[in-house]
Length: 304
Ligand code: ASP
Image (cartoon, rainbow, N blue to C red; front, side):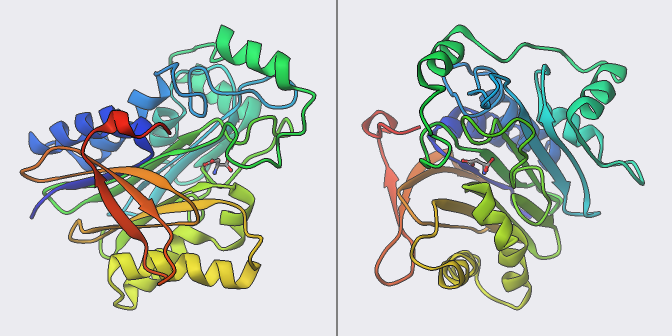
């Protein structure tokens, strides 16, 4: 069986390479997705995830993350977590409990403290300055001005599929807001017998369609991974109408084949057994089938 890994946005390029190296050296999908996500969580150049994430309306950087093991369907998640380095690692640590798999706010922070997770003030000088300049602008409804989730899906050589997500959510969101990113079925889903999916974009729209589970359900009915991604998004668009706010999603079938769908230009990264990480740009097309082209030189793409 062969491995593969897909991840959202150009910001995941280096993380995708790291994940690919783990899988190439016979590592697990779980270790691969976590390392990939953490590469983005730790990079202060990216203002929508982890360190240097953009704050909520009250000036707090609150983080959401989710993790799901497709062999067991076990999941772990944290929402509205402040003051820790890797919400994705904390989410992953929650998967083996019979209850209490999804913790939020102070409860999530207390769990992280009790279990020795690394603390970090994620509000950097850059993020704080931008917040002070822009806090009185109503940007919450201006999509894609300072939000994007890092999502990883990986299949290892044993056939285990895992999904992992992490975000600081919508810029200037209400304090306490939790988006789709930590919600299984919405921001991510994984079932090694079928496949996996994960989403980025306006969480309130993604949650309306329980979008990641919708993609996996279509694959379960026998649909090809690319068709399933396009159909799930088309169904939601039809239901919500033309004013649907931005959404992009990635998907993987049980054999590691990948698909994507999007309402706007959307970069993503893929690595497969025997090859290096490649950067692609997906765009919606008139035909309803997402158009995908390889970006040979990442520096030619200005968006993260
Ligand atoms: N889905 C994230 C949220 O709504 C944000 C994003 O991916 O752009 O919190």
